[in-house]
Image 1 (cartoon, helix red, strand yellow):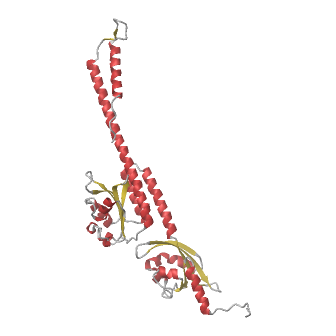
Image 2 (cartoon, rainbow, N blue to C red):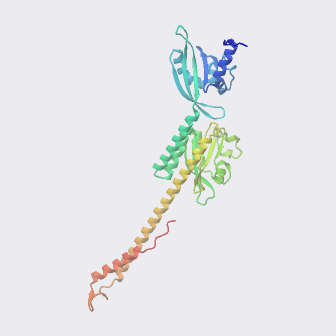
Length: 372
């Protein structure tokens, strides 16, 4: 059988299928709009990202695809492209499950033969993984710097709570530590956004004792394991009566502050938005909890050392005062020394100096007080 070497011509349907195959397998979301911003074509990644299919998305307006709020946010960029310019922007989209996706979008005009804009092409890249790595790395560095530069435990914890809230978009954060008898946890520090319901929630938290294994905070206190609730209202272990309705519909994240294998405090964060579990954030926050625990333990040891030094200084002062008192009341006016020549006495002045010197030596031999 002779091979002609001629290539079989593909029909229009084969070409369309081939183009669809290519478009659906490129590692980006692509879409084409006409000059009125109605969808002409979208690959599978783009359509499914917005909960549609490659067929159902065709003919829909940009506003209908991405939502009213997002449309008004990005419309200026699309207007530029419809004037024949190129444009690019970055934005964050919160999915229905509370997950945040970071997107980078490049827009290119579709110019006809007459150089008139016929529509545009949009290529969207999901950079969430890269962005999260950058954010979490920066969060870890900033927390370490805040702890290292803090003058007190109060300032350090307040700064860390605020940094986590602002970086990770939590509405408020609270730090609880055990009471003097260790029976309950009580609020020690907090931070929240300037919202009346959030501030009222933080104010009321000052008057609530957290019991062991009661609610999310009590559970973390005794288990030593972090807990994440995507929606507080659906979390069986949550103490729902302690939350305002705005926070019941949102997420919560609670984790222990550890030192030498023991829980010495609990940090809790809340959001009014539903928050999907973020495993990488969990790992970073657990490390932060360890850093805070080491910092608190170091500050506690420094405080104990200062207290011991003050006690020792006071004991030495009292001993010296006692010796001076005895010196003035009991010191002899003339003492015959065995080391002197027979019959010769030490002058009163030398005797007092010798007595004071022995008192000084006595204070130096004062036993050190325990530091712990």
